[in-house]
Every structure is written in C-alpha cells, then in structure tokens.
Length: 323
Image 1 (tube, rainbow, N blue to C red):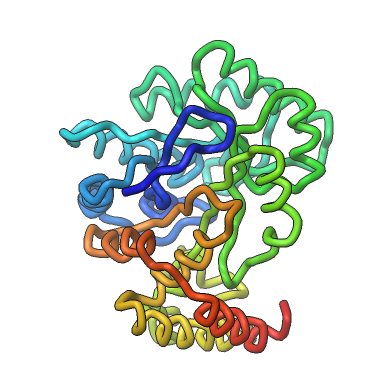
Image 2 (cartoon, rainbow, N blue to C red; image 1 turned 30 degrees about the vertical axis):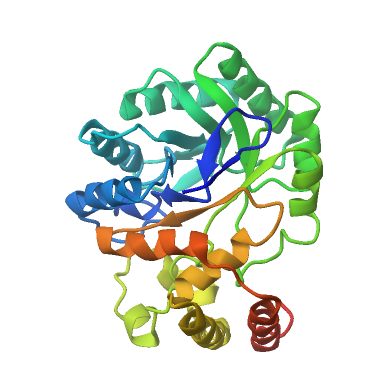
C-alpha cells in the first residue's frame, strides 16, 4: 500500500489506518456497546496483513481498554510493527463520564499510563484529543506535549479537533505534526478553512469517522439502529435520529450507486471521498471484526471521477438541506 509523509514528521503512513475507538468496549460515555476482544485482535491483525502500517487509539477509549487491546494484538503479531498513535486530554470518573484536562500534571500522568498500557518506551504520535476554552490551559497542555517530545516519550506531537485559531496558538509554542479532525459527507465542515490551513502550514491531516461512525457503510438501517444497545452512544446521536437519519440514508443510496460502478461498498466510496482532498494525508477507519477490514483497505484504490463527486455531493447537499 502506498504511503504519504505525515506533516513535518519522518513518518510515512498508509492512506488508511486502523481506528480503535469502538474496540474499547462498554463502560464509558461514548462506548459502542459490548465488544469481543478476540474479534478486536483479529481485526487489527487483518488490517496489518493487508498492509496498514498505523493504529490510532486513545487513553479514553474504553477507559484504557483499547490501548491494552492494541498492545495485546501487537504482542501476537509477527510482521513489521506498525506505528501507534494515541491521545490524551480526556479524563474519566468511576461512571465513565469524561472531562477535559490539559494541565501539565494530568498530561504527564496520562502519558505514563499510556506508555504502560501500550508497553512501549515512546509513542510515535501523541495527540491532544480535544482543545479547551481556557487559553492558558491550552498553551500549558501544548507546552507539556513539546516537553514530552524533548524527553523522548513522544516522537511527534499533534492535535485533534482544533480550529485554526487554536492551532495558531499551539504553533507559536512548538510545531504541530498533525491534526485529527472529523471529516465525512455527514460532517464536511473542516473542508473550507481548516484543511487548507493545514496544507499551507505543513500539518498532516488524519481524518476520523470518514464513514460517520458506521452510518455510511451501507449496512446501517433504521431497524439496526433501533436494536442498538442502550450503551451505544450512536443511539443518542442526532445523525442516527430524525430528521437527519433520512437525509443520511439518502446519501448512502447514492454512495451505493457509485460503489456499484467501482465494484466496492458505499463505505469504501465514503472513505475515498475524504481521501480525494489534497490536504488529507490519511483516514482513520474502525473495524470491530476482521471481515470488516477488507472494505476499509479497498477504498485506497477507489478513484472517484468528477462525475462521481458531483453525484455524491449534490445529493448530500439536497438531502441535508445545505447543512
């Protein structure tokens, strides 16, 4: 699989990476319900077999469990070791409710805990998961990240969910290697301003939820959503409920039509749509079972035509009322 350099780093990463949000399992605010750990390990191995060379996780996913599963999968993987990216800045309480914390002491503690769970000496890419409104705390957090890099605990440092102003503040302290924003047909908001800023500033962009947390895979239906467990955060998401659900499912049908021409799934078309943007380095795609991984990798070879893009984007704008 072809690779691209990530921002100002020396990391060359494949166009898709394995996302481990869902495999954290149940027990926290943004869980996807129960998950079989053996399926998770098998899915990671399948992604690596197909050439994926990086895994994205976070301390908060499954309140540490996702990082532990990534470590378990890599301990039993006998091929080349992938890059491992993780995130900090979201803490949790005994009930799994999350809060933002970018203080120096908190980030340092999170880093040590992630290193322990991942069983590594250095994190390849360490990212602030979410910004905070307090400018002083944001700058304190980014200064701490830069210090962790100087100490060798992180090879490169990045941010997630930052806007342009927040990135500019961080850049004044230390270079940003990458931004991780949400980007999909459901949420294209970063397209006009944030992606061009990253491209101009040599900040790599690894987009998350290109299939809108499963909504654009082609496998999601009203019936399936109705049967989701109560602890699946998507059941509460506006995108999985009316009035947006009908609009999103209309987009899926257009993705399905385009996918038939390219002999791939609607989800692969949705991923390919994000990868066609020149500012996007790669896309994070999750899989809870090994058989779901193949669709993820196929997207790398889907080259959408101008006609395809017009067809997809016009129905998206019409269905979603210009949202």
